[in-house]
Every structure is written in structure tokens, then in C-alpha cells.
Length: 167
Image (cartoon, rainbow, N blue to C red; front, side, top):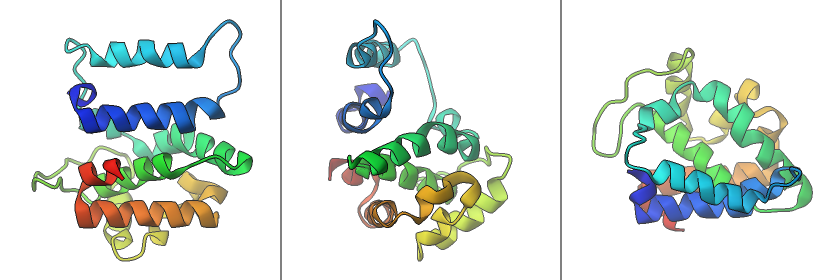
């Protein structure tokens, strides 16, 4: 469903093309932009059902593997990190435990209790979330990332996830 949603699919495409792919070292005989097109087609297939809960599962392990490395590369090379900061802010918002619709999220991380408590505190002070050094390491202390993450989380809280992706 996400790949059929015009806002979500456009946001993902933008983040992949502008922030993720440029941070990946060249792969022999592979055009990473063409590969991204293949991935989009795969996840756009309605026969492949994937839930937000599954995507967010074990985020405390996934963020340091898949989100933080491209953020670090982009910070080092002077590229944008705003989309990835928003992805991290969306995970923080998810860990607050309730969807914008009011639906409660089931705990889905081995460290859910800590994540949930920290995410609730982050609504008032986003740096609390970034101070989880086991997840964010040095990236969580970088002023550019702190500013972008804080703005993203504030936008999500004030305007909702969909409008935050449109900014």
C-alpha cells in the first residue's frame, strides 16, 4: 500500500535517490539507480504485503545498520540528511506507541519499554531520543542532524506524518 500512496512513494524515492544511493560505494556492473527502480517495482507489487509494524520491528537494531551509516556518510560529504532525519523521527513517533488515528502499536522491539519512554520524552526534547548512543553514536551529537531531526519530529507532532513528508 505504501508504494501506491503518492506522498509515501515520492518521499521514499527522493530519500533513496538523494540521500541513500549517493552514500553507497560503487557496485561493479550495477547502476544503483536502476536497481532502486527494480526494488520499487518489487515493493509496488500488491502480492507482497508488508506492514508498518513489520518494517518498524526491531528498529533499535535496524537504525544503526540502515539509517545511521548513510547519515554519517552524507554529513561527512556535505550532502542532505533531511529525509533520513525524518525517517528516524518517524520511527521515534512510532515508538510513542500510538498512531495518529489513535490505534495503539504493539511493542515490537526487545527494548520497547525504553524506546517508548524515551520517545514520549522526545516530544518535548528531541535530543533525549538522539542521546541513545547505542543507536545514534556520534551522529546523534552532530548539530546538523540534531537540528534536522528536531525539526522533523516537531513537524510530525504538529502537522502529522504525511504533511511532514511533503515538506
